[in-house]
Length: 85
Image (cartoon, rainbow, N blue to C red; front, side, top):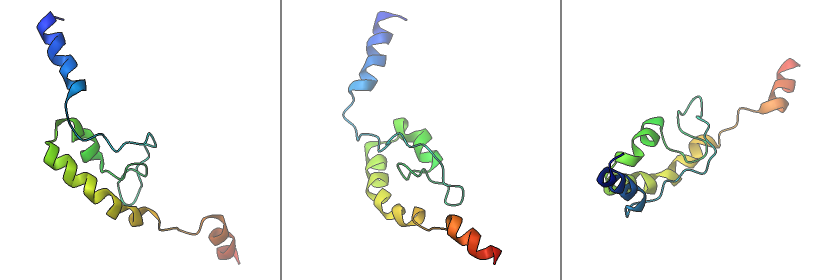
């Protein structure tokens, strides 16, 4: 890699931008289609590094509103056992 290109590539890691909300629990909820760790959609995760600061900030502010979408329980083992009766 050419020296100037290398310097330019290194600047990506020094940009002043909103940190990623990723918490390294990367599992997509099958119904809601959002990550159970950071609550972003796959499109938001994919585009995060090329989004404007304003777009990332808007998404970050909305993430707490998505938490209730993931807290719905289907009953687990208890519901399955009750349905057998």
